[in-house]
Image (tube, rainbow, N blue to C red; front, side, top):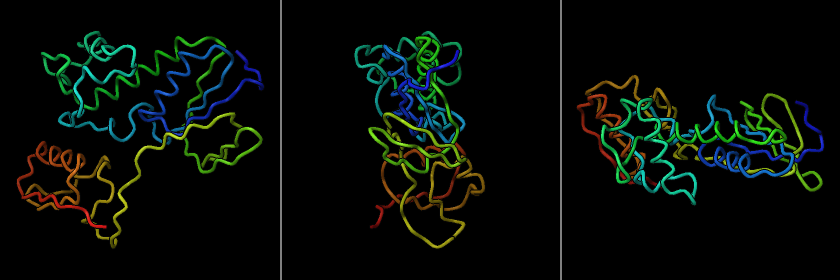
Length: 230
């Protein structure tokens, strides 16, 4: 189907949790022609940094009964988990309920499912366009803006949603191969010997995740958390 150039366009920059849910809610509620451009440099939408982990010990810090994507449907996540129980075998405990803290990678699959269902059920004059690219500029133009992407494409937008997520840690250091600036790199611990000592700068949730990851790899050397410096 062709779409009129006059259809309003909303550009969402970032397709992690926030960007994907904004797109899903627009798809579900749009009552007039609309083009939604979802820009994400990762191959997959819906997961972002937090929910891209493949370590099953990385859990949500809120129980499943309080993590619905829809405020007016507080049991939506639990219903989805039960409906998809067989497909999630190995990722969920055999018995789970509203008080269970589920793996974050499962919640990422949940967000992806919501976006896919919303796209499939959207009216015929509402379109979602996924762009695997990186936005490098947003310039005001009239009542809207022009969005430019790293691969060279530019287009007009009536509205722009910035769903940029988390930037890597800002700690500065010399180019020491032992220093890992981005703890969420997929290969973050690949070259780490099981008996190598580890210093974790910071005592927040990322530190907890790294300890869980080290434990899952049967790391035996001391791991020392410390408060970050300014």
